[in-house]
Amino acid sequence: MDAAIDLIAERGVRGFSLAEASRRLGVTVAAPYRHFADRDELLAAVAVRAIEAFGESLAAETRDTGQPAPRLAAMARGYVRFAAEQRPLFSVLYAAGLDKGRYPELQAAYERVDDMFDSCVAELCAGDPVMATALGDAVQATAHGYASLLLDGAYGDGPEAIGSAAEQAASAVTALIAGRSALRERRVAPSPQ
Amino acid sequence: MDAAIDLIAERGVRGFSLAEASRRLGVTVAAPYRHFADRDELLAAVAVRAIEAFGESLAAETRDTGQPAPRLAAMARGYVRFAAEQRPLFSVLYAAGLDKGRYPELQAAYERVDDMFDSCVAELCAGDPVMATALGDAVQATAHGYASLLLDGAYGDGPEAIGSAAEQAASAVTALIAGRSALRERRVAPSPQ
DNA sequence: GTCTATACCCGGATAGAC
DNA sequence: GTCTATCCGGGTATAGAC
Image (cartoon, rainbow over all chains, first blue to last red; front, side):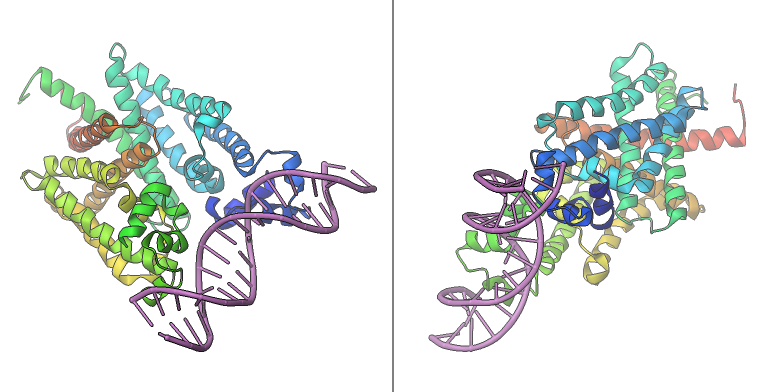
């Protein structure tokens, strides 16, 4: 699995092959089949490790922030950072084309991350579950968008691009949350002037 | 190129091959090489067509909306719709792994789409170009995030998932814009109560 | 757990004839 | 513009020995 991650780091998920990974380990191509039924099963195992690291990374990023809004902003920041700093792991999660139905353990791991967003959002939208899932989706989409475009090179390369994208994602989430409540108040009490 | 698009629709960009496309057209694998230097050059040609369709789609979506904020929301809606309804074209744009440096024509086409966002944002942030590019990035990231997660199956399949994601993207952008100005006012005149 | 050996399929790409 | 023929490389996966 370590060799797989190294290989993915160099060539991307699409460039990964059991054959090449075996070669790097100095074993023959037949060896991995003692441990994994096929190529996808190895990738799925990497994905499970990846999503656990992802969850821990998000948790670490939010540990020091108590209020829900800043915590959501921190999650977005952590999301983007993880994507960039653990690029091979992130790409296995979202660019490997794994059939999630085939790997229930993986699906469960995804849901644990979703829950981190949802539980954070729930504090903000107590009593309005529809609004809550909508806001959770919006935060996740914002973070995911910045992360994807960053990995695509849209913001350039290098550490300053990472930091900038992460901060922009965080402040976009802050603005998003502020906007939701501003719009809600405006609807309740129109034209506050 | 049409055969390529059909094939990408069925198997995704990664499953596309010149050989299979040739087979479907009833020609041999050697034939395409009269028209394209290699596989990537064909994909790049498809990408140019794709990004032009993308631009037109965004333009059509915003045609009836005059104010900048609703127009940005409409662009996000159009972005998500296009990704879902023209999935093969969208995936060539963002999942083909094309080296943009190799295809200046393609790079120029990308920039024309970026400009659509930027010019729209410029009206909203007149006199603050830093803020403008930040907001443009945020809108694009939001739309891209919803689009990516939608194509990934995060919101389920079927037309209702598309519509819902598109509307959520639009309202997230609306909230984002409202939040920016709300936060700015709060900074200028703290605690309005 | 790993090896050797092998079967099999696929793709990219080119030369030279028509 | 297409064909035939061919070369080359790569990957997946299995059987059977050690």
